[in-house]
Image (cartoon, rainbow, N blue to C red; front, side):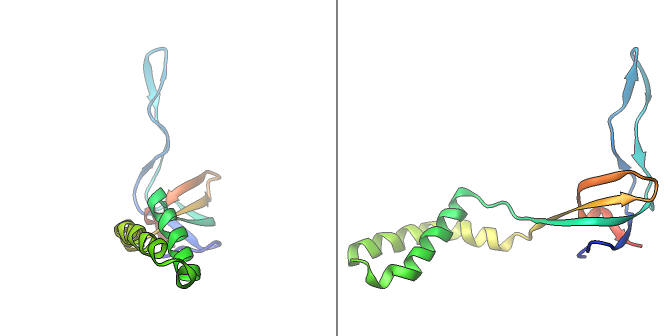
Length: 123
């Protein structure tokens, strides 16, 4: 499911917002939102963590694609080997789905920011 800004959503499960709060050594409570609590998506952010190997693959592959034909044979061969050694990291990166987080303003005034989109259902 892909959420969009402005979309109405509800929490799919009870969600704890704080750990237990203690006063003078006595637990006085914790803050949670119940499943079904409604709100509106304010912002959607896609995240896909790139490792150093992925960034290096992108950089070297671009260099090889753009200038490989003009490079001396030995330099091109070394560059091709380096790109080949980084391909497993690139392939794994492409197979991972990007993490999508959202900012939701609930009808009760609470705001939940950076929550994974799977925590919500369309209203």
